[in-house]
Image 1 (cartoon, rainbow, N blue to C red):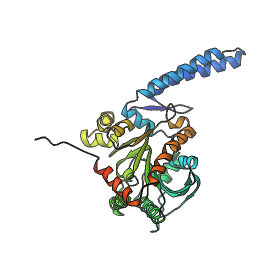
Image 2: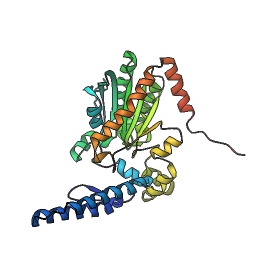
Image 3: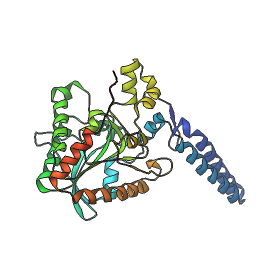
Image 4: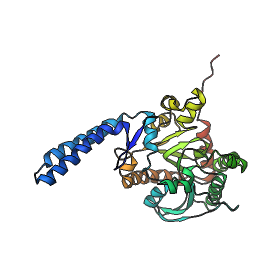
Length: 327
């Protein structure tokens, strides 16, 4: 994986350094203008145009491993950020009714464009303390059981479901396996596949492994422009295939994990554009784009009956992973 560095202002990826160099020039011109009381607006405007042009060029040509870096940016909007900006009256519901409340998955009831919906999402933390509380977005079995409770609530009351996916995977610890991690995810896959209400999933950052699929069986799969969706992380794939996690770049290119790849393969249904430089550059604009994309899908799916929804959902997943045998 390519490296990055943390400046006093923000995290900077290697591929962004040409942009930062121009931004540093702008700051220097502003300092000189204030210090010497001279007008350098023309020079600053020219450099600002160069920054925009450089960012457009760089982000238009991002490699898969670089998109993974952007998807993991620590300032990228989290699920709760999006929920607060696209929904009204969100009421979070806690617990799996078996004595646990996994903070890596959040969910509850909200109003979206005047319609009551159930929202379930992977939630990462913003800083180290928050990430520890959220277990870095890696849910335990209790998180998937909490999600299942909410899915069943949606089915009982006929409420559409929105899931926001952002996880490096389900928690892989021994204690999670002892408490039934694989069974909890498998039960969610089964129940979501036959849920008689519309389900729309949006990959907002990382969508990795069964941890993502545990809330990801849906009628429509939308992906933010710089998100990724895969059965395993590039590092995990490289560790298995080449016994070398440092070959993540090679794995990312071979796996077909970007939004463009998945749209072409018929897995994703729509790519939601992000602000130039990634969703973290303008979270409100990113939320606006997500809301604009989500509305038509929920409206269209809500016009379908339960039987048709389930049948179409089954057909969608049967069509994935097609292959040709040659003898």
